[in-house]
Length: 221
Image (cartoon, rainbow, N blue to C red; front, top):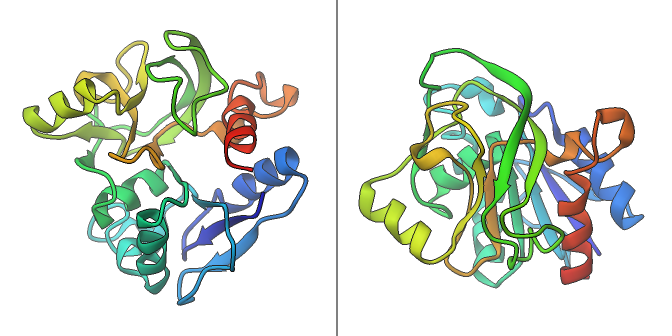
Protein backbone atom coordinates (compact mmCIF):
# COMPACT_ATOMS: atom_id res chain seq x y z
CA UNK A 1 0.00 0.00 0.00
CA UNK A 2 1.40 3.37 -1.04
CA UNK A 3 0.74 6.08 1.54
CA UNK A 4 1.42 9.78 1.96
CA UNK A 5 1.52 12.01 5.05
CA UNK A 6 0.86 15.72 4.61
CA UNK A 7 3.23 17.94 6.63
CA UNK A 8 2.36 21.50 7.65
CA UNK A 9 4.41 24.06 9.57
CA UNK A 10 3.60 23.19 13.19
CA UNK A 11 2.75 19.53 12.61
CA UNK A 12 4.11 17.49 15.51
CA UNK A 13 2.62 14.05 14.89
CA UNK A 14 3.67 13.58 11.27
CA UNK A 15 6.56 11.28 12.20
CA UNK A 16 4.36 9.33 14.62
CA UNK A 17 1.89 8.72 11.81
CA UNK A 18 4.67 7.81 9.39
CA UNK A 19 6.11 5.29 11.84
CA UNK A 20 2.68 3.73 12.36
CA UNK A 21 2.06 3.42 8.63
CA UNK A 22 5.47 1.92 7.94
CA UNK A 23 5.12 -0.49 10.86
CA UNK A 24 1.88 -1.89 9.47
CA UNK A 25 2.43 -1.64 5.71
CA UNK A 26 6.16 -2.33 5.61
CA UNK A 27 6.67 0.72 3.42
CA UNK A 28 7.63 4.24 4.47
CA UNK A 29 5.08 6.87 3.43
CA UNK A 30 5.90 9.83 1.23
CA UNK A 31 6.17 12.96 3.37
CA UNK A 32 4.44 15.70 1.38
CA UNK A 33 5.17 19.32 2.31
CA UNK A 34 2.13 21.62 2.43
CA UNK A 35 3.40 23.85 -0.40
CA UNK A 36 3.57 20.99 -2.91
CA UNK A 37 1.00 21.04 -5.68
CA UNK A 38 0.86 17.32 -6.45
CA UNK A 39 0.55 14.05 -4.57
CA UNK A 40 2.69 10.98 -5.36
CA UNK A 41 1.35 8.94 -8.25
CA UNK A 42 -0.79 6.00 -7.28
CA UNK A 43 -1.18 6.92 -3.62
CA UNK A 44 -3.60 4.56 -1.82
CA UNK A 45 -4.02 6.46 1.44
CA UNK A 46 -3.46 10.05 2.57
CA UNK A 47 -2.84 10.85 6.23
CA UNK A 48 -3.26 14.31 7.73
CA UNK A 49 -1.49 14.29 11.09
CA UNK A 50 -2.06 15.95 14.42
CA UNK A 51 -0.19 18.97 15.67
CA UNK A 52 -0.70 22.69 15.58
CA UNK A 53 -0.54 23.59 11.91
CA UNK A 54 0.37 27.25 11.45
CA UNK A 55 0.35 27.59 15.24
CA UNK A 56 -3.46 27.25 15.28
CA UNK A 57 -3.72 30.90 14.21
CA UNK A 58 -7.21 32.12 13.22
CA UNK A 59 -8.81 28.73 14.00
CA UNK A 60 -7.31 25.29 14.35
CA UNK A 61 -6.77 23.95 10.84
CA UNK A 62 -8.09 27.05 9.07
CA UNK A 63 -4.81 28.12 7.47
CA UNK A 64 -3.70 24.57 6.67
CA UNK A 65 -6.99 23.98 4.86
CA UNK A 66 -5.93 26.65 2.36
CA UNK A 67 -2.51 25.17 1.66
CA UNK A 68 -1.76 24.31 -1.96
CA UNK A 69 -1.62 20.57 -1.32
CA UNK A 70 -5.12 20.48 0.17
CA UNK A 71 -6.64 21.15 -3.24
CA UNK A 72 -5.05 17.91 -4.41
CA UNK A 73 -6.15 16.09 -1.25
CA UNK A 74 -9.72 17.22 -1.89
CA UNK A 75 -9.51 16.09 -5.51
CA UNK A 76 -8.10 12.72 -4.46
CA UNK A 77 -10.87 12.27 -1.89
CA UNK A 78 -13.39 13.03 -4.62
CA UNK A 79 -11.88 10.20 -6.67
CA UNK A 80 -12.32 7.81 -3.75
CA UNK A 81 -8.80 7.82 -2.30
CA UNK A 82 -9.03 7.18 1.48
CA UNK A 83 -8.09 10.18 3.63
CA UNK A 84 -7.45 9.88 7.38
CA UNK A 85 -7.33 13.06 9.44
CA UNK A 86 -6.21 12.73 13.06
CA UNK A 87 -6.70 15.48 15.66
CA UNK A 88 -5.50 18.62 13.84
CA UNK A 89 -6.08 16.61 10.67
CA UNK A 90 -9.75 16.30 11.64
CA UNK A 91 -9.86 20.07 12.13
CA UNK A 92 -8.30 20.56 8.68
CA UNK A 93 -10.88 18.25 7.09
CA UNK A 94 -13.79 20.24 8.54
CA UNK A 95 -12.18 23.51 7.45
CA UNK A 96 -11.83 22.23 3.87
CA UNK A 97 -15.46 21.07 3.84
CA UNK A 98 -14.52 17.42 3.34
CA UNK A 99 -16.34 16.73 6.61
CA UNK A 100 -19.24 18.65 8.16
CA UNK A 101 -19.27 20.51 11.45
CA UNK A 102 -16.48 22.20 13.38
CA UNK A 103 -14.05 21.49 16.21
CA UNK A 104 -14.48 24.06 18.98
CA UNK A 105 -12.56 24.85 22.15
CA UNK A 106 -12.98 22.10 24.74
CA UNK A 107 -15.99 22.71 26.97
CA UNK A 108 -13.85 22.98 30.12
CA UNK A 109 -11.37 25.27 28.31
CA UNK A 110 -8.46 22.97 29.11
CA UNK A 111 -6.07 20.80 27.18
CA UNK A 112 -7.04 17.13 27.47
CA UNK A 113 -4.20 14.58 27.19
CA UNK A 114 -4.91 11.02 28.33
CA UNK A 115 -6.10 7.64 27.11
CA UNK A 116 -9.87 7.56 26.62
CA UNK A 117 -12.41 4.82 26.03
CA UNK A 118 -14.14 4.88 22.65
CA UNK A 119 -17.16 2.96 21.43
CA UNK A 120 -16.89 1.71 17.85
CA UNK A 121 -20.14 2.81 16.24
CA UNK A 122 -19.53 1.57 12.70
CA UNK A 123 -17.25 -1.37 11.90
CA UNK A 124 -18.19 -1.54 8.23
CA UNK A 125 -16.03 1.30 6.92
CA UNK A 126 -12.60 1.16 5.30
CA UNK A 127 -11.11 2.53 8.51
CA UNK A 128 -12.94 0.47 11.12
CA UNK A 129 -13.06 -3.03 9.67
CA UNK A 130 -10.55 -4.20 12.26
CA UNK A 131 -13.07 -3.59 15.04
CA UNK A 132 -16.48 -4.90 16.06
CA UNK A 133 -19.49 -2.58 16.28
CA UNK A 134 -20.18 -1.75 19.91
CA UNK A 135 -16.65 -2.68 20.98
CA UNK A 136 -14.82 -0.47 23.47
CA UNK A 137 -11.25 0.47 22.58
CA UNK A 138 -8.74 2.72 24.32
CA UNK A 139 -6.86 5.38 22.36
CA UNK A 140 -5.10 8.55 23.62
CA UNK A 141 -6.34 12.07 23.00
CA UNK A 142 -4.29 15.28 23.12
CA UNK A 143 -6.23 18.37 22.13
CA UNK A 144 -7.49 21.77 23.18
CA UNK A 145 -10.03 22.23 20.38
CA UNK A 146 -11.67 18.81 20.13
CA UNK A 147 -15.26 19.75 20.94
CA UNK A 148 -17.14 18.55 17.83
CA UNK A 149 -20.25 20.55 17.03
CA UNK A 150 -22.75 20.64 14.17
CA UNK A 151 -26.35 21.71 13.79
CA UNK A 152 -29.01 19.18 14.89
CA UNK A 153 -29.96 18.28 11.32
CA UNK A 154 -26.37 17.45 10.43
CA UNK A 155 -25.96 15.40 13.59
CA UNK A 156 -29.13 13.47 12.78
CA UNK A 157 -27.88 12.78 9.24
CA UNK A 158 -24.56 11.52 10.58
CA UNK A 159 -26.36 9.16 12.95
CA UNK A 160 -28.92 7.94 10.44
CA UNK A 161 -26.34 7.22 7.75
CA UNK A 162 -23.95 5.41 10.13
CA UNK A 163 -21.31 8.08 9.62
CA UNK A 164 -20.38 8.29 13.31
CA UNK A 165 -17.34 6.03 13.42
CA UNK A 166 -16.29 6.48 17.05
CA UNK A 167 -17.98 7.90 20.12
CA UNK A 168 -16.45 8.76 23.49
CA UNK A 169 -17.66 6.24 26.04
CA UNK A 170 -17.91 9.11 28.53
CA UNK A 171 -17.77 12.92 28.14
CA UNK A 172 -14.26 14.14 27.26
CA UNK A 173 -14.46 17.58 25.70
CA UNK A 174 -18.11 18.56 25.29
CA UNK A 175 -18.52 17.08 21.81
CA UNK A 176 -22.11 16.86 20.62
CA UNK A 177 -23.45 13.38 21.27
CA UNK A 178 -19.93 12.41 22.42
CA UNK A 179 -18.80 12.13 18.80
CA UNK A 180 -15.08 11.33 18.47
CA UNK A 181 -14.82 10.52 14.75
CA UNK A 182 -16.97 10.82 11.63
CA UNK A 183 -17.00 9.67 8.01
CA UNK A 184 -17.92 11.50 4.84
CA UNK A 185 -20.89 10.45 2.70
CA UNK A 186 -18.77 8.15 0.54
CA UNK A 187 -17.06 6.56 3.52
CA UNK A 188 -13.52 7.22 2.26
CA UNK A 189 -12.72 10.18 4.56
CA UNK A 190 -12.41 9.75 8.33
CA UNK A 191 -11.73 12.50 10.82
CA UNK A 192 -11.07 11.56 14.44
CA UNK A 193 -9.70 13.42 17.45
CA UNK A 194 -8.06 10.43 19.23
CA UNK A 195 -4.58 9.36 18.08
CA UNK A 196 -4.52 5.73 16.86
CA UNK A 197 -0.85 6.13 15.89
CA UNK A 198 -0.08 6.42 19.61
CA UNK A 199 -1.53 3.00 20.35
CA UNK A 200 0.19 0.65 17.92
CA UNK A 201 2.87 -0.99 20.08
CA UNK A 202 2.70 -2.74 23.45
CA UNK A 203 5.06 -0.09 24.83
CA UNK A 204 2.32 2.45 24.21
CA UNK A 205 0.13 0.69 26.76
CA UNK A 206 -2.15 -1.03 24.26
CA UNK A 207 -2.40 -1.75 20.55
CA UNK A 208 -6.02 -0.79 19.89
CA UNK A 209 -4.95 1.87 17.39
CA UNK A 210 -2.93 -0.62 15.35
CA UNK A 211 -6.10 -2.40 14.34
CA UNK A 212 -7.28 0.70 12.48
CA UNK A 213 -4.18 0.66 10.29
CA UNK A 214 -4.29 -3.12 9.86
CA UNK A 215 -7.91 -2.92 8.77
CA UNK A 216 -7.00 -0.23 6.25
CA UNK A 217 -4.19 -2.37 4.88
CA UNK A 218 -6.54 -5.31 4.43
CA UNK A 219 -9.35 -3.33 2.79
CA UNK A 220 -7.34 -0.87 0.69
CA UNK A 221 -4.21 -2.75 -0.42
